[in-house]
Amino acid sequence: MFRPLRVAAALVALATTGGVQAASLLDYVGQCVPFARAASGIQIYGDAWTWWEQADGRYPRGHVPRVGAVIVFAKTSRLPMGHVAVVSRVVEKRVVMLTHANWSRQNGERGHAEQDVTLYDVSPANDWSDVKVWYRDNDGLGGGIYPVKGFVYATGRSAAELTGRHPDDVAALIDAYVPDAGMR
Image 1 (tube, rainbow, N blue to C red):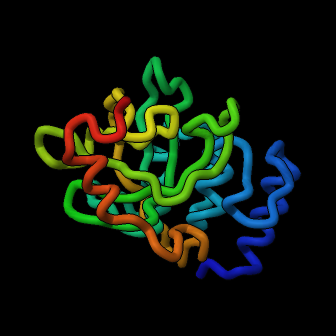
Image 2 (spheres, one colour):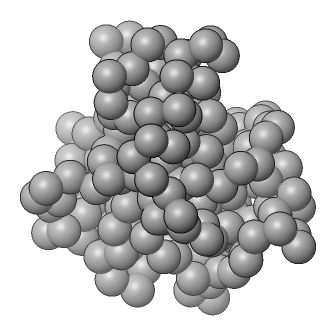
């Protein structure tokens, strides 16, 4: 079970392993892997793209998003270490929200945590194998399509700060389904 004490311990670990001292999960600045571990309670280490194989036999895996699950992005030329993020909200069948770190730039630098950002399934088979992710620099979905290995399901509760008090489901749907929404 994921308890507040465990979150506090994870935040201390983040701060001592290269992350910036964080009063809350959302204050974290660093890599996506330690953030996803702290936010989900899934205790996997190593590059993000290795999480899918490492989870085999240790954690349930699948291709359906659930709150608290870690989505594992494949290793690509654009993501040489892959990426992991935690599902914070399921909006509808092809749209979810993520909470993650080290994706968009904030104040010119990467590494910051972002809460409740849009993830859109663009795979032809509706199986979450290809996605688009909201990107702050575009103020909307980025132009890239990223291959995904699947979801690793947490066996306990995820961090309380995983989703905001008032996530904007409508904005997430607009990001996903309205062409060029947010593009300038």
